[in-house]
Length: 93
Image (cartoon, rainbow, N blue to C red):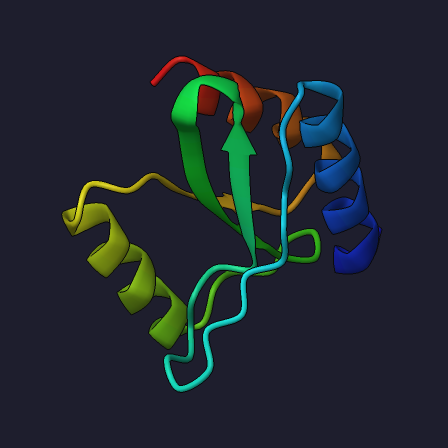
């Protein structure tokens, strides 16, 4: 399954849960996660979408660590099966 397909499924599933999942673009600050997951009641997380088996690049990992140190949740998604767990985790924070 391609990264784009997983990303589309994430967007659709977030919408089913009453949220939005916009593409996140950060000009001049490379390595930021691909998507924002914004759910009802102020629930929020960043999601890095990868093709199955792919891992984030070193710069991406550095950005994930930075965001985590700032108190934000960051998830790496590389399979459709992970989507429900990520949404559940975001909703429970």
